Length: 494
Image (cartoon, rainbow, N blue to C red):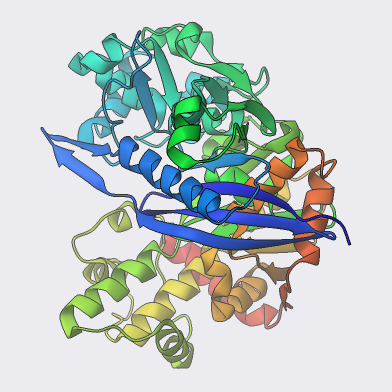
């Protein structure tokens, strides 16, 4: 039996975070959640911030627990959501809590930037990134326009996972996958675009050195060693963008696959050796984000279980309690199929005061039957998501250099067996569901690669596949879904 190797992962999402202990032994990986905590937004002075110090303190708490248990960890890795960043002053101190991507100051900034600074087509040509108002480029433009003092005084600008690693090691880096979410990275050169940096009055020196996933950043400072009780453990730059870590954990056997990272957002894409930037990808607003081992995550963001989660929250607030996921999903499957269909990515579903009313309004405006009951509304959501997945999967087949034999569904949404089957039927492709904890697994496996425990991405994926039971869903009912897709196109193209 081989010696067990242990790794520490901090996995921070936009609503909550976790610290996790991963153990690899005899070609298998196991993970244990050490701590879980909220990631709270702070609203003050007309802006919305993240509490970077609270997140750091939660990571410290997880490391303390490791020391108290007497665990020997090989390394530490941090992944977070994308786009947001921290300003660091000349004295090495953080100047202010980072603005959150939900801050309203970027709502008008994107249009102003694309109209008056750099044209939309040229930004896409340089980066291959889809246009979202909260991308770092437009945040920086908004901050410049407002005379943000933290930005004006910044000696360094560090994306959130890099800032947390800096707080642990005193080493400033710019990790490739998280930098790619900024809409400032040139995917061909794998470096920040000097033209786009100049457009927001910044120089390359303001950012840390560019590092690829699997690169050692540094070791815990003496201060952190004293606070936690740990020795000088290495901190590794994993795929700092949580989706990058999740895709690294897709348990594929070869390159003939697409993936669907299913959660609040659904991210559907393929892994390519080079960025795909052309008139068609621009027209369809596909994005090219950094992956591990120099790959590109060519994908599209789809509004995912956000629709379902918001409706369920409304029903809970109205009735005092919510049906369980199992009860609600089963009742949805008993409702009439394809009675009402929506475009999940319509702007009216971005953040409505009532998601239930927004769905009903969309159906009313498109002359469809109005879903009234929770079962009817959930069926509408599931049908519509599966049909949207079919549309995007069809586009991915256009772009993919290889046939796509299987769709891997990872993340929390992989537990929804009904939607998994509907997706297999809609896309007419074999669906393999799991793992649910893809982000944490990808984080830990990148640390294992940095520690020479595995050689490459395929060995990583083999270990993950060997460690869990995937659920398989075979496509069925092709003719029924073909008819439904024609209805979907007719409705959504109005």
